[in-house]
Length: 256
Image 1 (cartoon, rainbow, N blue to C red):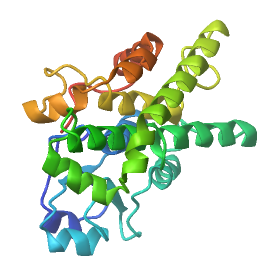
Image 2: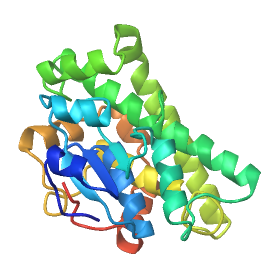
Image 3: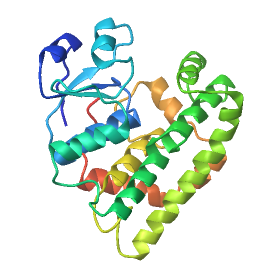
Image 4: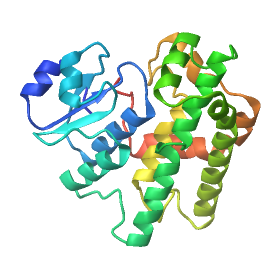
C-alpha cells in the first residue's frame, strides 16, 4: 500500500495510478481499493479528499472518494470499475474468476457488500438514522450531511437494520458452507475480491484496534455503535474471516 500522499496539484501533473481517498477515516470503499492494489502489488499515490478543493473536483469529477485516475484515462469511482481496472493492470493474482458463472456470482456477492442497498450502504444509513435520533452513530451534523448525500429518508433509515441483518446472515451462512467444504474463502478455494470487500466493510461494524487503525475518538465511537439485532447477526465467522484476511493477505497498519 502507498503511504505517500500528495496534493491534488501534484497528482494532476503526474501519470500512473493516483487515488483520492477519505483521510483519517477507514471508509470501506477506499480501504477495499487500497487492499486490491496491495494484493496485486500495483503502486499508487494517494490524494486525501478535500471537500473545498475546486481543483480536485475539476480533476476527479466529483467531491467524493475513492476516485481512481490512471494516466489520462477518465476517473473511476465505482467499486466494480476500480476492480476491473486493477484486473487489467495486474492480471495476476486474479481476483475474479474467468469462469462466467463464478464471475457472475462474485459480482453478485460483491454488490450485496459494496453496492447500493448493500451491506456498507445500509450500515451507513443505519449510522445516519441513529445519529439523527440521538441514539449514537454519526454526530447529528455529520449524519445530516451524509444522509442527504446518500439518499437517507425516514423510510430508508427504518429499513436499514433489517437489511444489515439479512446481509450479515447471508454472508455468515456462505462462509460456514465454504468451511464445511474445506475452504476459508467466499468462493472456491482461494482469495477473490469478495473476501477483500467483506473484510473492508466489517470495519463499519467492528473497527480494527486503534493501534492498527488510528481514528479520532468521535469517529471510532460512531463506527462502534451497534444495536442488538445487528450485534446478534454479526457472527464470529465473519470476524474470523476478516482477521484471517489481514493476517494472510492485507496490510496493517492501515494507511489513512
